[in-house]
Length: 379
Image (spheres, rainbow, N blue to C red):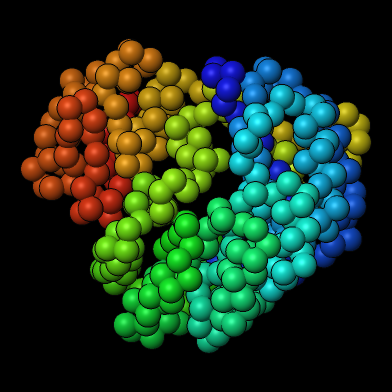
């Protein structure tokens, strides 16, 4: 394990209201908020040796909606982490927030508390589209929070956008991208709407009252996004992520590079380089189990094949690609031999390209990244 690399993720499982597409673990009741925060602190104590002394380079408050925390609660959690774990001096500390929570005063408090990066869940600047997603903010609030973030001192922040939305009129996606570009955020994450079964959209789809966009239209919107952002100087460094240099999302980049991380909170995942651990996705069960000094989690040990396949899946999503030499050195696996036929076919179809020892997805290949990765898996 690289002693200089590790991350901590804290899952804050509360939201004001349920977005119709969201499949993450959350509660719209704040009844157990204080108890969950106390349990997060206790879990950090119980698991302070999980990363085996690795220095913490990134901390990420995710959810749920972490911007429902008071700035004093954020500050307290960060101070608690720093008493338990060795932390690098220039640590990236990210907090996810919704525009309706991010007032100028609150943003200034977060900055003073030690947060130095924001992930702002905008999704759309159009009020009609936002209402169709059951988002709590308006387009006006989306603009205001970006401006307020800068006033509060944040130079490193990301905004989330969503495409593949049936509620968005044809041709409006390019307008949304232009609006985002006018705000010049240093980082943009853009995700295609995925219909999960246990969501409002999932139930509507089952009843036939929600018709997703075709894969062709989703592909067109992804291509439009890529072309417009790259034309404006953004680096497309992961399929869903674009940045102005040097504003890579360090925490998420470490996920894609296989760096260990500790996940704290209900539903949080952890990875120590050998196994994955999954906390229970239930607030009260999490609180009660932690109170008994027990981690409410199940563990999955990764086989050699699991490590190989995860590396293929994650590395191909990035601009750094799948390093064939690295695979031979660390996994004793020669991908060019085991999947020669599949690699050759993908190259002929214009889906893959090779630069020295790197396999890289082409723009066409990025549209079917998961399918290409699965074709290269080791079984």
